[in-house]
Length: 148
Image (cartoon, rainbow, N blue to C red; front, top):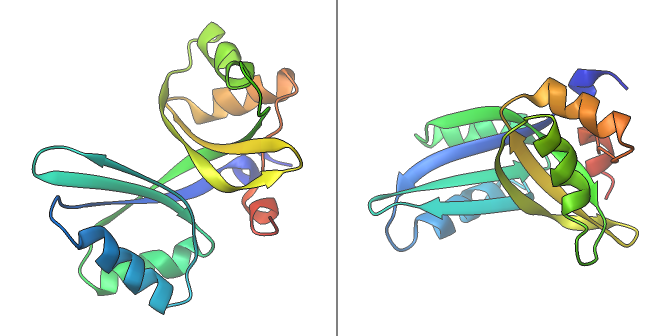
């Protein structure tokens, strides 16, 4: 698999931090048949950043932009992580040792066998892919995610 096939498309939107905004966004995507597979919501006092991985990112961007949302797209990683105490560090220690900064991470709704899946945003994505491959940490392609 090539480096670019290991990137997962994440879409982000910043909305007002008021009741109902997240519900409105979920309703729009669900109404268009778009499934949210991973999501994180980070708030500040007035604004909320919603990051998500969906089953059809191109359609989600088109739909959300047509509704007036300003969307940001970013390549992130989907990483298979052992689901036991200390399992997260099987991923993090290799990135730390190589001076790759983890900007954020959040869980993916789904599993690979007994392992969890994390969405990981890093400052040096191609370096992170190389590090994961060298250390036998499984990366999951967008194509494979769609089958989970």
